[in-house]
Image (cartoon, rainbow, N blue to C red; front, side, top):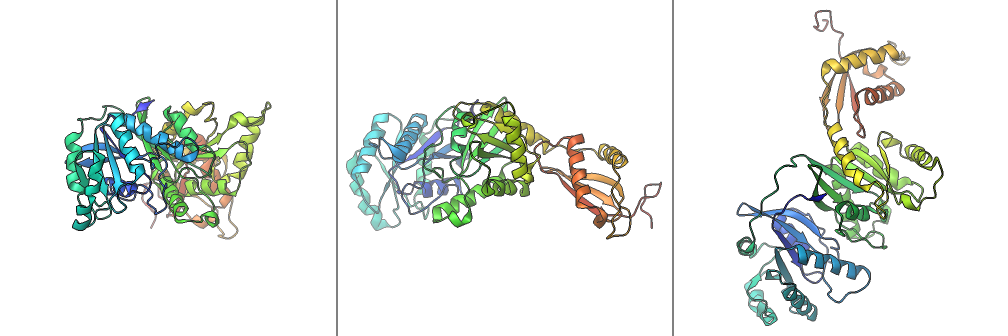
Length: 453
């Protein structure tokens, strides 16, 4: 696996709470990064493609840098930022123009100069001419030209973008890999989602820490796998709404649900070492209702004591507790050891293709005829007439939707409707994705094919 593009990379670097995420959102458009007054909200590197003067580049929002941190979460953020140093074609060093220079700003300036990468010195939160006149204090840093901007109001952003483009090397996307599969890893906090991302990418792209809820934002990363573009989304862990106790948690929860909505395949990550709970079922339901293909990833399989039928028993229990996604394939994986992790992109690509398949009307009706011969729909006492299917056609993809024209929709019992879906899946495929079968009243056709009048 390798990175998808070699567009020029621009990284935002600075101490916590100087407005990097607000700047990031201003450049890439929309609310892509979580913004909050609480320092340290951004912990992972958050990247997106930006464009100015028709020239694309990758913008990376890093966590607040504390150069001397050696332990804990702050040290993990520092390591992530140092990785950004090495990858970057250009570093944007952001400082807070309202607060003025701090000793930590000075330390970061020295670290940037030492790394040897090109940089621009950006003084943020300059909303007025008076504030701009006071930014001269940062000139003592010896970082060259100052660019004064207001990320909140857009002041000075155009001039800064011009300077960025003028300093970037030209870059082009690699040819090939036209197929794009969007895979979101979702699940409760601390089940190993970020560890799976790091294992898939072969690097420590996401911060992994024993503190639950380390990932607060949804982080998109693209790579190629066997000629296919994979957009990998590592999301903040979903909790019960009663446990969402601050604004950051609330927005992280919203972003996770949006990630489910915009992906093609949802990899539901659960801890194989713990029993499945109501929150796992809730997350599975969200993916099912959204019409997404689903893979159930039982992570930390290396920690489970195993006997001959342990995997079969775990799979049976998972299907019992997560009835919404009985159709989902199950993978027993370990982010720690790498067990089967490399097979996740292959399965995700297969499921993404399945949900887009189209069945011809003739093939569908041959299937319906054979299905009815095998098991006739039982008569309905409530309706008073035997159910009958005249014909069917596929009316939607991603997920697949089939419309059956029948004599009386209410005559088909719930059990028979389940039988139709299960038979469709068994005969025609559509592995891992929900199937929507709709029943529509239609007068029977005559031998000429025209509806009876």
